[in-house]
Length: 269
Image (cartoon, rainbow, N blue to C red; front, side, top):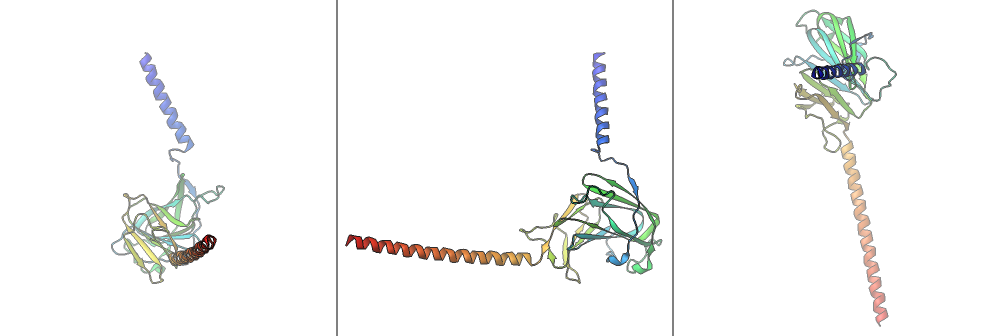
């Protein structure tokens, strides 16, 4: 009887612990909340067709004003999950996900031509979101399976780009014009990209092919392209100044030593 009571107490404690964790949100098991997202304008995005060998692709265009614009081509898809990192600089009083200017363009043909976005029409959608300690997940559900583009924007108050991976596919990050990444001193992307190229606008493009699930996130630290050169010049100038100061003091020390020797010689006479 005593043994049964002990087992019952352990079971009761376990149930209470699970319940308390669920209530406090530690399990991140919050139910999705319906939200209303106003449709945006496609003119603010670069809608380009995906490569023929890529099925899941998201391209993130970074801007110097800390704006991130993401474009995802979709093929015969009825829903899409958007994962946005929780921005620690975001006002805690704001409700809902940090997402803006959302655009859903598409057609019903399974193999519609992405090269002509003007042929697509605006698609209505329902949206819900789930928030946790480190990310927001926005779930878009379309009225039907479509082929087209989903684009959205958000602000990221940081000197680096951070993306949480949730599906396998290709991720492309386009740095702001005049910016670079990969310097050991100023920061390198993690993990190392599979490809690095320069687009027609002179912007650096970094590409990862199927990084998930081996990698759970992508971090890109970027900086002005001129920064390493400026720092190298500053180090050179400071080094030359230090050398000049060392030469000057060495010269003064020699003069003082010679003066002391002369004075000692005069005293001996």
